[in-house]
Amino acid sequence: MSEAGAHQATVDALRFAGVRALASSIEARDPYTAGHGALVGAYAVGLGTAIGLAPPDLERLRLGGLLHDIGKIGMPDAVLFKAGRLTAEEIAVMRTHPDVGTRILDGLHLPCDVLPIVRSHHERWDGTGYPDRTSGLDTHHLARLVHLVDVYEALTARRIYREPMPTADIVAFFQAGSSTDFDPALGDPFQALLADGTFDRIRQETRRTVVQRPLSSVPVDAQ
Image (cartoon, rainbow, N blue to C red; front, side, top):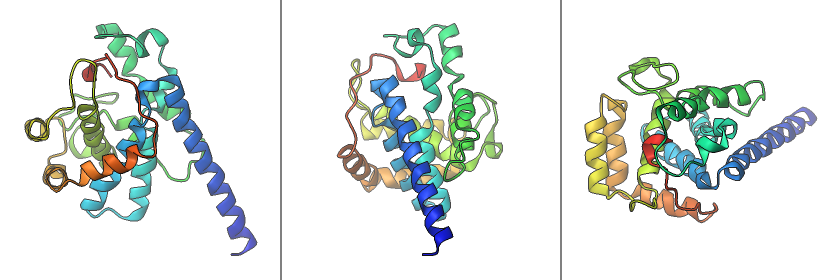
């Protein structure tokens, strides 16, 4: 390897170390999120591979999934750690986290561009998401994918008030949300990964390498 190549490899390694540190800072801020980003990133890579995305996009999915909730570092303790349902005002505050996350990461020169994922992972196909209320193909394609697997990870996490959602219920949930919440083009490949056990294997493999988070009492729809 040339001297320039070695230097670039060192820079990239340091940047990746910074990414890992940012991800760890989310978990330190809110122990509930421990492992969530790693799982979302792993699921996103699995789904992205299934639909034939190229390696650069798969790397963006992995890092974007890992960092998609980085903006929660800026959420007030009273909102982030509230036990129970949030008020309308508190939900409005929580919904600023994609914008906060984008501003945190902007200018850091990460190994690949994950800003569209971080900003738009809560946008919905029908335009009722946040923060920009984009709809359909106007939302970045990688953000649409991360949005789907982010919801999936939340539904399959054990909560104080419920067990993980059964697979049959998950299938029905995502079928009902196709063309409203989720990109309909992702429906069939997502269902195939559920059916053949790929997501179960990804979950098991990823959880071997991450700290397990405590049970959360905050409803999924308030996060």
